[in-house]
Length: 101
Image (spheres, helix red, strand yellow):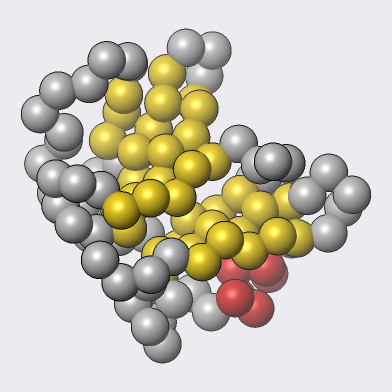
């Protein structure tokens, strides 16, 4: 795969979440809505205290165009599902869509 983020349904909260590498040894967990950090982890993990932004696919692409971010986890306002938009190695964008838990 050509992206460095994983979209999944968090077992503890039942909501879409994304985890990606941050820094040389750690990971960041972002959920649609902030909740308590996971009870236990086997790796250094930072839980993002902010909710995922509510953006359309077009607005998410515009945000990536304006920043140096490689990917963006966001909530689709029409469905409430989590999505990840990422920069592909060929220069285009890829979209990973989540489903309801």
